[in-house]
Length: 283
Image 1 (cartoon, rainbow, N blue to C red):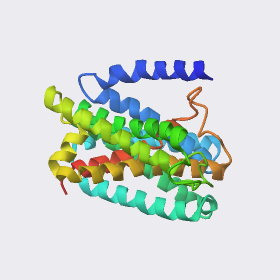
Image 2 (tube, helix red, strand yellow):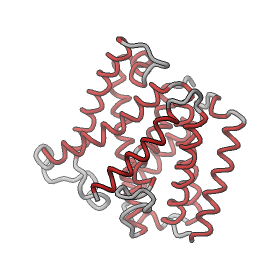
Image 3 (cartoon, rainbow, N blue to C red):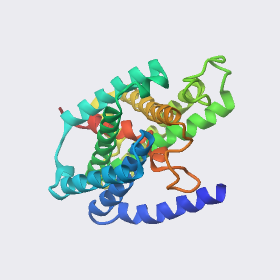
Image 4 (cartoon, helix red, strand yellow):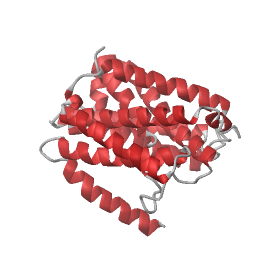
């Protein structure tokens, strides 16, 4: 399993990194769109649609988003869209996490499909706009999610149950997640943020990082923004776990050997990227 994970990660990096640093954002955005279309296919299958319909939905999303990229939508400011999508994430998460796994199947199947496709597609649009603004901004946003995940895992293993007792974060959805892990994830995000603030001051780059933009806009209230983004990363992970439990599957698919599916790798990014765009946009 470990060898498969390493090989898959190396192959993905060998494809994504050259596209990321390509002269224009189009190559990276096109690759991101392929992954997003695969995510739509996974989402459709997890929500009870067969292979043919799932492929059809994925192709539809690919064509529509490619058209949006062709007309240049990735270059237009969309602050109202980011506000609406972030609010939708907060509302959906509040409802589902309070009601539990069984609440998902009580939502009409077609509505589940539409909600998922909408949120997945707006994530693609957000990552495309972040890349359009600059590589430094995109990487600093991605690193926020990765840092939250890595530090949460480490803190959960080291301190799980020692600070907040036996109370789990969401035992019926993801038994391994602890409040200690959430706290550790936030600490990791803050460390990354201040390190990146230092990098922005010391070295020139193609754009300001997420952390510098938040500091310039909110001052020390940047920490509250980081709390919000860290919690959204946790929410994205929990919501996907809830959907997988409802569907009775361990992974969203087997597209990425050793890693599961595309949604398994980007679940925490789904709510964070639109929210990051909201925080750095001017309404």
